[in-house]
Length: 255
Ligand code: G3P
Ligand code: CA
Image (cartoon, rainbow, N blue to C red):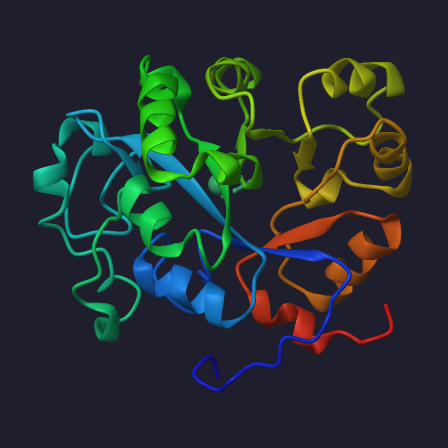
């Protein structure tokens, strides 16, 4: 399905490929990002952690076991060691040989083809992660393109620290907020963030309205079904984070 050319018809909402097109290829690998690009996603969402020697790498779990042939915590292995692991076979043997990517590699290879939504994962484990990210971003991304990048985290302070180092970056707070959260509370966040990205089950029309009135954009996560996507769009979200960038092709064209 993904090998066929896909028409890039105009679509009013952003499609964010969660860990790449992770329904079709092993999350966070080149294969997953390349599929997201082929499927015309607007952004790729990636999780970033640090190797033992401080390199930002794309990886979701704290442990290597689920998505590689390694074991134990990712931060206990150097980049050299991580690069020896296979990150594709767990998903399907046809992906054997896919590697853990560094953030630099991903940006250098793909930033001209897709935008990046970068999640700072487990910042409490990595005291220097903002400094390392600032170094990587400054080196890999042309200055005039830094404002295409959104950095986000569940941790408000890590986003604030990195944003202070590179003010051009767009910022997002990921949350599991309760839908009855007060307008006042949301307004408090507005000072710090361009995006508030909540778990989709906590999103309702009132919340999206308050965010919009406050000038904050919103990408709920993770959307699997066309009906859920349509519900989110009817609330007025700006886009959806999904493992399946082809979801939009199953929706009517007149939404
Ligand atoms: O973009 C938000 C979403 O990715 C947060 O959940 O666990 O998939 O990183 P997780
Ligand atoms: Ca994530």
